[in-house]
Length: 238
Ligand code: MG
Ligand code: MG
Image (tube, helix red, strand yellow):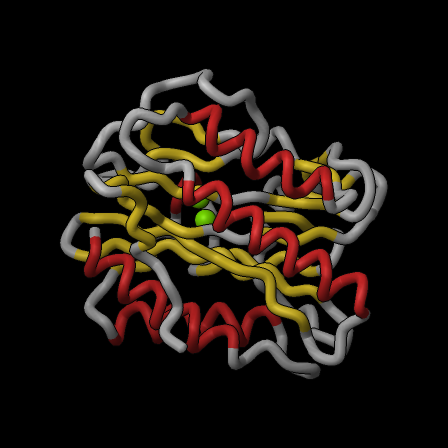
């Protein structure tokens, strides 16, 4: 899991650099496929429940599960990259939202607050805590920032499969839910909207957007619960 995560961090660091005006979302997908295979890994998303690409790219009001295609990025866009790979049978799943610079100050703040919410959620992933502690920390921080917290899509356990028990919601109550034990691996993935967090799925059957069209962002890490606390497996190299 550690190695899978490290390699995915490298892949995402490469992809982040490719987010610029004029690039298409399919350019990012091709780069993801290359970067994953170069590292001896399998692109986990390709064919997953029928997903047709190697990477989810979700732009602006798209929240998650966007399918790469001919869309051309423009300055000011918020581009969410979600990637999963399999290394020797073990999964890693992570992502981030990258601004296609320059972006508006209120969008930069949305990114900062959501990434901070992820870190606060991660800090709760320690033995003896409960899954609700993670969601509570994420929700508190996003709502204090004035953002909507997407409820329909959640984080998850991860290991031999991408989606394992338990679900890890981005909202919750402290002290509730499954107990967090040493050795558990979790993908924690807050999704925040500038407006109402209600979502719908586009006609392509995949792309999740905010019903009110408000822009959104998302950050995700795969995290292992150690005896002393959380270890982020998918940290991006500087
Ligand atoms: Mg993901
Ligand atoms: Mg995930």
